[in-house]
Length: 280
Image (tube, rainbow, N blue to C red; front, side, top):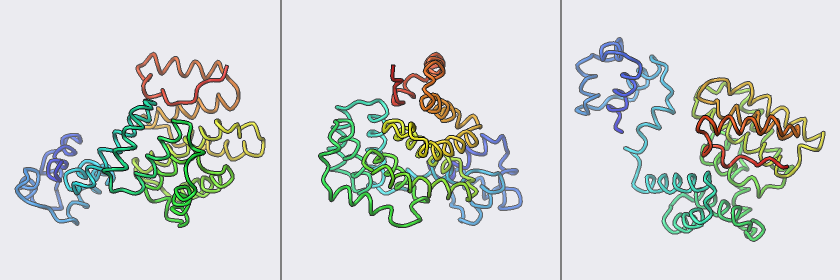
């Protein structure tokens, strides 16, 4: 949606009048023109309005990005959404179909890498990926600022099965240290960190690393961070996932099964289909 429409949505969600929304920043008649799409708004005034009402800037960006994105960016985003849906539902035929479409149509190199790895993973063909592709992925994380880049966070989350465990853990220790000392104010960015840390827990479970006492030390740190930062309703499903993984690590099958049953009962069956299965 356009900037004016996004501002109107946020204002109505907050229960504010136009006068209250722009008070002390711009005049109400001008603000009304912005909402109606008849006038633009300066970046400084826009930021002041968002900050005044404590609106997450990442959330606002999410509302408007499709309207102002290039056709190529919109195509990439659409393909990414389709692939993510296929992966979450573990639809192997759809994964393979979209991997080919992304390889042909997409202009985003990182999206192409993610798609190739996802298709190989669900087809049990990770060993067949060539070394050049793997090195391309590794080199993306040579610079420290990768922790601030959403596309690289998604790439790491999707390619964890490829990484040698010790190398992966070094990256995750760096990530956890970074987010612990940084005040993460964006819910969207916090969600990205939470998701990648939970993906790491799944990787540890798949590789049986939780059975190693030395490895459990860092795993417990990750669990502790997740428990502490998933108390809000918005992150509740991640909190359940963290408790579920904790139960799996402790071989507490009863608790794990009860979590699954409760979530299925309340309509979260499709959300948890990609969670690790309980070993009987």
